[in-house]
Length: 633
Image: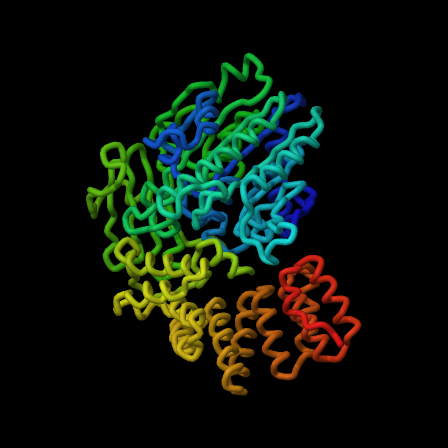
């Protein structure tokens, strides 16, 4: 939902942590500024936008006329890299200047009550800015920990009359919300808006697209997102605004065997656009200072640099002040910085598949990436200026950059939170914390499995379970020790109506990864289906136990609450189900699946008047569920 959040009060942190964060903010506020009105700030992140899909960077012309025009009016960073190819951790790094292992949000689907340092929004809020965020995907919902410092955090993806569970929002609707808020701001006060557009993310289905899937479908999405950017920029008015447009990561589009992103760290997924420009009334001093129009910078920069650069450009803290305050990994790049070594890390291969993490660095045109947990690390060195596609990298055993690679282990492990089904619908595999022992597979050599699971996930989302099963059936047998493979085989079999076979696959997945909530949920669903066909009390009891364990692993997981309650209703325990549902609905009062089960529990208890009230609520907020309600006689 849209949330009004009063600055730092959003952070549920300890007294010591709060004091530390407040001290950091106070130090920078006192150290800067002369009391004059600051320019407003607009940060636009276009999810999954690889740099060469932008006409100013690539060979494809006409895809991004509005971003191209912005680049002409400001400074374009030709060689910007993300720090990690995943949405939540990359955005957290962008807003804090810390790499994922330091802020703790290393993969999607996890959460923190408070990031270890103040975010860009907190800095600007403390300096008198009105602040708002408008995000377009559930993976960036406020519950994940990025809402601190925002007066208004719009993560309401629901559409009137639409699906009860929304995983993403079209860019035009997000821009509509942002423009409405910007138009309400007083000219006398500066504002900061972060606008996140998710459209280029798979599956590719642009509202006005002409292509189906593949690179052409992706470019249709890019064109659509650029038009929404144009609308947003056109609605800024005459006030002075510092505009930054970038992306959290790119998209591999089949390069190196990766269909989308999130596992490998080749340039298709790591090279992102970055533009900074002034909009509206600009003073002579601003025109002469950074960012200057028509400038193309060739030095390597990172999304880690976004927050320090914005703050220094506004006069809200120099690089030295910011670095001293919280030892940021990012730096202000208003001026080129020579000799920097930029961190690269990707923990998702370990988290999702039990493979080795990937870690590396960028220094100038050199890029080093390895799999430090694999039996043979294979550090691969590429010179991007000579080999931008990274097809002729050199394996090195000794090189000075190897000593610069930092650990990817998080300083604090962020817990997995609800809702895991949202991740799957957005094209991500489920959140499964894997432990594969000491020697792990190198993900760069295991992309046949990753590609099969990624493709199967997409096919299941779009309703093609037979094709998904065929892709998974073709996976080589030496991957049978990977729990995620059995999980998705179980999903496909369930979708095909082969629930008994699905139970067997999911039992194998559970044996390999007993503390995976995703596996437990899927296993429980399959057992429920078997119980419905066979009237097996054992299957029903097994389903209830699986859902209970899943909820213990991920407290608050809406689907686990719903499925456990359904199992209890079928077991003749509606009172217990109702108690659990009421507690969950206190936190999520508009969760349609929970309301529907509450209606069922009340009906089972003979509480017809209350059931009727719930049915009327469902009719208002989730009308697509009304067909499941049997009218009272």
